[in-house]
Image (tube, rainbow, N blue to C red; front, side, top):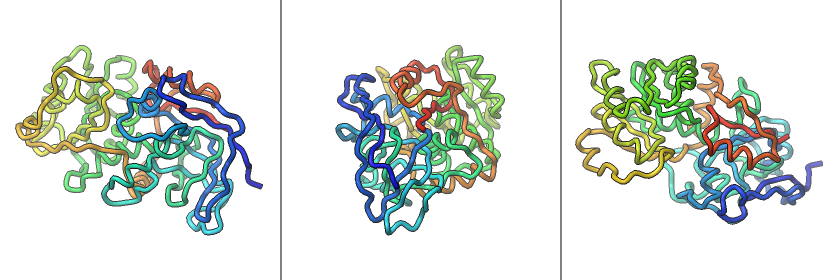
Amino acid sequence: MAPSTTSQWTVEGTSGFDSLKFTKDAPIPSLGEHDVLVHFHYASLNYRDLLITTGQYPFGTKPSVVPGSDGAGTVEAVGSGVTRFKQGDKVLPIHCQGYLAGSLTPAAAATGVGGMLDGTLRQYGAFDEQGLVSMPDTLDFQQGSTLTCAAVTAWNALYGLESGALKPGDTVLTQGTGGVSIFGLQFAKAAGARVIATTSSDAKAEILKKLGADHIINYKTDENWGETARKLTPGGLGVDHIIEVGGPKTITQSFNAIKIEGVISIIGFLAGKAKEEPSFLEVLQHTCVVRGVFVGSRAQFEDMNKAIDVNGIKPVVDEKVFGFEELKDAYQYMWDQKHFGKLTIKID
């Protein structure tokens, strides 16, 4: 018999990490005809999750939401009309439950898990069968729990613009060692691309080398790292793809690095705000494409999972694993930037 209650976290207000509240026996609603009840084993965190607790997330959230977009689990029960999954299947939720394929719409963008819809930081959660994908066969639950947001975002950045999709021999620039950047490095190397990675740490630089980065630039000691990156490309023509996670404080360097008709994918603003930001004239001056990336579709998720299995890609997971009731500590650990790769939570 399917469980009737679940342990879960919710976000109550915007006072920071103290807004996180733990409940041991929240009721589980009855399953609808097309619902799938997922028993979560692991979840992983994203910068987005931290911002939601402070009210700084620029997209919509609902009151008392269960946080977390990333998680992996097994199907506990299914509604009478479910055809895509059966009990015991290993599944992952898609980030925007209404974004199945094609172009993102405002309606689909408003279906973000852990924001507008209840997320993964709970033992059990019900999802429409259309909002789930099968977990890659070659990954375990901890590894699978890292894919929904960061991995799909990186995949979309490299392949989402069909006219500028990544090709063998291209050069990709990644920034830092967060989840999106690491996945971007791994996907680029699997595709036969050259990767230039930036970091501020010699220790992290060594790990980036082991992951296959061809060149590493310390952005703390090289303030003009964009120009340095350009010089490292064939003929000094510039970088084909930039996974831009820093935001206003790094975008100028990205413009300095980009190739004519290259693609800069704007993903985040980890470096914070800047007093002065480039204008739209910078795009014209550098004759490049600048696109915002908001995770990706279910179709992209499924394509990415195939590539993960075929290429044997293993997500990079931080050695520190937090227990389910240690969630506030996990948020602080991530806020302090102590993590490398994805930070995971063991639920059950």
